[in-house]
Image (tube, rainbow, N blue to C red):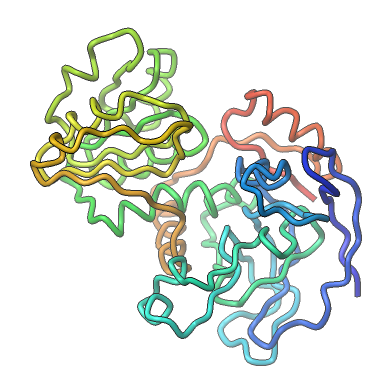
Length: 333
């Protein structure tokens, strides 16, 4: 058996049609026939080898929606034909303290989908069965793919860091990650303030559920928000005045990074002494993702997407690289 896909044959090269033999299906694996797969900036980083560990040929894609086409001999609980989603994580050891606690994303042997294995810009993809998460009926396949990475990335720290409905929170950046974080936190019951460089996205953020808006560039609005927030999540990759964001936390507040700033973090320790925390986070375990999907289905949360045919993948990548995506791009087979 062979699988047809689109692959990068080298760093920063256009993707080409590619065919590979996946070998025998593992006993604990499922094969998922892909119907849709999102484009994430992590895919671009891997295509361009920005992180230094890409191996070619490389089939990107880790925001997969499809149906189970085959199951391994030891798989229980998933049947052929079940609609599932697959995100960044494709496997783990299943034995360490983190896997036993249901925190597989923290496993030292955690296996990302597009690192050392082919991803979802293909006819099919294979992962350990537990990482193929059933999709609730209320979510459509065409727009759900980005929830498997972007949605899980902003939802997981809400759960793991104990965000409560009474909290006042802020979301830095109203883009691919941020527009989902605003929706999740608003439906969670929090009072949400969106933060962007200008007021250009003010109206959009409020439509997504934000109550307040701060423009961080060329204004004093951020400084005026000192001691305002219990939780701030940053979804951007720019270098911002992070000391001002720490000052905007209330005592015992937490600043969480899911975007990676372009420069080393500069945070004055003195401002942390009121029991404030600075943390990082990523998309979580299969159980976190399942909760995220159920919550999204219940509250009608969905990403803003644009759809391209899989065969037009290079045009879709150009669209994303040019910063034209509003806000997530999905490839459809």
